[in-house]
Amino acid sequence: MSDEISPFRIDVPQADLDDLADRLARTRWPRQLPGGWGRGVPVAQLRELAEYWRTGFDWRAQEARLNEFPQFLTEIDGQQVHFLHIRSPEPNALPLVITHSWPNSIAEFTALVGPLTESGFDVVAPSLPGFAYSTFPEPADERPWTAERVARTWAELMARLGYERYGAHGNDAGAVVSPQLALVDAEHLVGVHMTAGVGIPTGDPAELEGLTDADRAGLERMAALFAGGSGYGTYLANRPQTLAYGWLDSPVVQLAYLVERLAEFDGWPAGTDPLLPHLDRDQLLTTASLYWFTGTGGSSSWTYYDGAAGMPIDQAVVPTGVSHGGPDAFRRIAERNNDIVQWSGRDAASHMVAMVDAAGLAADIEEFFGKLR
Image 1 (tube, rainbow, N blue to C red):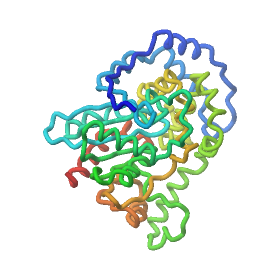
Image 2: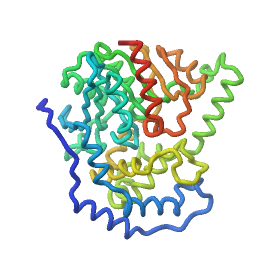
Image 3: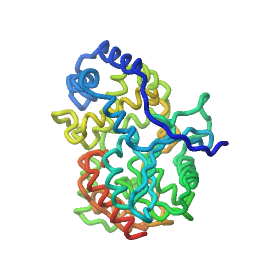
């Protein structure tokens, strides 16, 4: 296996842009079902977004913005790994590997990288295996891409970059991978920071012991928010290949799926106008375009099929910091099996925290690792 690291730039052929525009123009639109957001993404709102993707969205501008970040490719465990690597101008910077969410991309972090490097972090932002330019080999590796395997891949990446001491941050899928690093590379990891997820009740009655009425009320509000929104998880955990045909053949299928998932906590399921009140639609369409141009809608679903989705694991090997962590009850539950040294209960407004509150998230990350340097 080669440990070579090669520079990389995104350069989508014009023919692919023309094909996307043609497919969007020829979309067969369904009738609107009764029930609005209760039955899925509304036709009128998605149609308007798809038309903007076709006629108003400037991919070349977004491509240029991504290419402002130094990007690289390397092979680890038979897997092509694409990553951003931005060094801080500050002396004695702390390396920080940041892992994006599902279904998202490294574009999730475009507004976060600057504040982090300015505050003394060397940022390494890999694309998860099977996402965008971390494409799977042909034929695909039959070994499961568990969160532990990704964590071992990240540990090797950080070692290959020459880092002997580093921190980790993650959101959603990234918040599952990051604490796994504590179990596979505790010798080099100084701490784990994540957005939400940890401390969410699993259904064990013992978790609720000692909680106040206010705590229980907060948990009930969160349960109501989640209710009815995860039917896709069961399907992806069993039949992802079936959905992959639609994602690869129709950009609107890919867009609709991303909108529904990225809109969580952002007006979904009740729905608001505009479609995504907190998320920038150019940033959303950048991720949709990355999935479309790389054909990785299907391969990204390993997070469910291989069991890497779900709640973050508990670990007390290294300190944990949490941003946008939700009700205080979550912290009290999390503290039973984690070394929680910082907890921010900021209102996330959206599941995609780095896309809607990059400044707040960067401040929390800086404060947490400032305690560990």
